[in-house]
Amino acid sequence: MRWSESASEAESEASYAQQQTAERAYQAWRRATILRYQAEGDVETVNQAKALVESLTQRAEEGIVAAGATLAAAASARNRATATHDEWLGALDAALAWLARAEERLARAQAAYDAALSEYNRPRVT
Image (cartoon, rainbow, N blue to C red):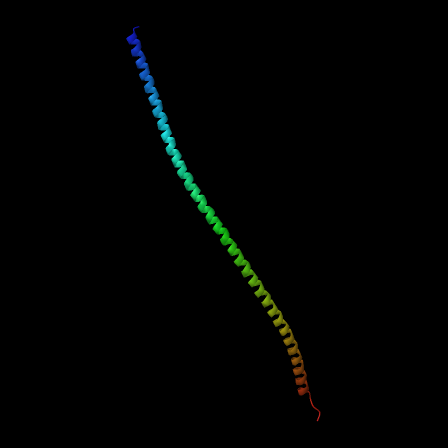
């Protein structure tokens, strides 16, 4: 084999190796680009998820505050209702005691009336 044939063959192999290397480099670049776009999409998705979590956390904290205020208002309303209930129970007890005394007075008055009527209707000896 002559030197020119060897050089031509070496050049051909070098050209082939260069093409293969360029193809592998292009494929690696293409894969890196795809991965970069996917990573950018993932970063955006993570940022959106983070914003959602922050929003939900804030809403939950606001809900806790509102629940605390509602609980305090309910406790206050319960205390007022209990006081009103106790007041009305006292008034009911007083009214029932008054009713009992009035029924006793009525019974005495009815007995006095019956006695007076009986005395009035009793035959008289003249």
